[in-house]
Length: 274
Image (cartoon, rainbow, N blue to C red; front, side, top):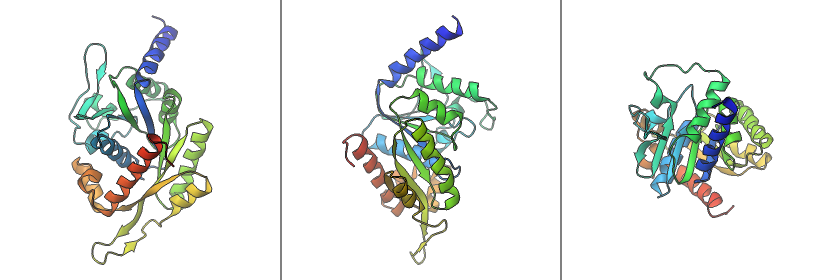
């Protein structure tokens, strides 16, 4: 089969799979280190915990962390003879990551654009996602090959942007806004992560990275602001141990803020509210 025919056949499989997925969210940020993967993982887990069928697609090919964050890093992707089977995290959540195809956990993925685009297409075309209410895509920072490929292939998808409050982060996230606009990729809203620290001793808020920058940017660019999440050392501990923070600590300040964000996304995307 020649290359052009192979691509057409793959396009058909992509279309068939995408038609089975109701809502597709690409979690993005122009800046690294803002907690984007943490947001993507916990969003997928939270949605699945609310009874929705969910998938988590990790396209951060050079730094895949989702399996570690879910404590399933030793799982491998297998095939049923026709399709790749996603890793089952729970009854309602399936996960795919390049990390599950690597022989060694520390092995680097040294690929140029065409190879990266090819594996992302394969993850959408050849993985047995079945019917999903939500597919959450964790993309690497920036506006390069991976988010571009997903945005172009996954028709009907929308973006959730993650930033921290300081200007150095907002500068790069503004680029993600313009990236989305150029690709006609609707933006669900902006999350401001690491928005202050509640002192465990005096309970006063300390703005380590400033506060409110994400909302100001959202207002100025006429984008919905989904909410602010404060710093909490337990988020780091939970991430390292593979236990999703926002399901374990629902009653914490960060947990309450995150669950309000999830409810806003559900309200806007499923119920059509604003």
